[in-house]
Length: 114
Length: 114
Image 1 (cartoon, rainbow over the protein chains, first blue to last red):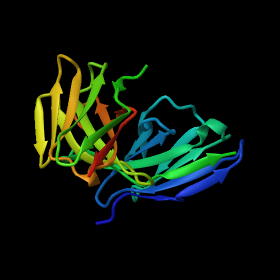
Image 2 (tube, chains in turn green, brown):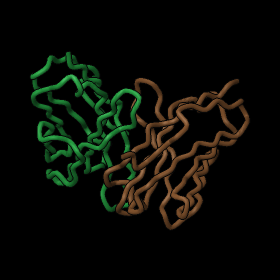
Image 3 (cartoon, helix red, strand yellow):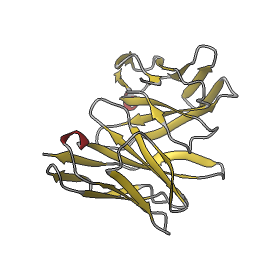
Image 4 (tube, rainbow over the protein chains, first blue to last red):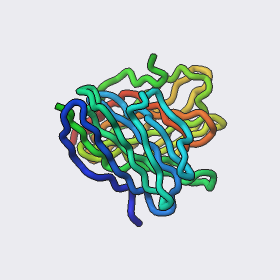
């Protein structure tokens, strides 16, 4: 049973560039959430996608956007990168309303902005 | 303003003894709580959860206790094993299930000494 997968594992960008991170949910899951984890902090919720729509959003600027595809995979896009966007980006998947609502995390994508 | 607090950045315990990790929260809307374990270079792994309608949940060596009046929960690991050495995150959600946005603490690094 495939777990949550994310790509790429590592990424280096420069300020002002744009980045796209990808996530495939655990088999059978339909909901994808994205989190940002800065060094020494706990993960912070960015947004959640369900049925190809943004279901919830945390306190992140509009530079952070996402998408969910019909196969439930998801992308996180960040525009106009800032140094402070350097972090581990985690994707988590779950299944809404069927007793499997625990969020399971992927290994993350480590983004470094120079 | 941190809504979920883990006030101990680190904890060292002898192998075979009990590990107790603590977590406090301030948001009265939180009604579902989870513990995740994280090894370096991996995503958080789900350990155990508890709904606010319960005060205790047990799964093997792991037990979570919830004191709603004190807005406090704790994770007990008995007996502790060297493989338990990791960073432990407490997380909370509002909405009755772990599928909604999770708010995390900063984590406690547990070291189990052989």
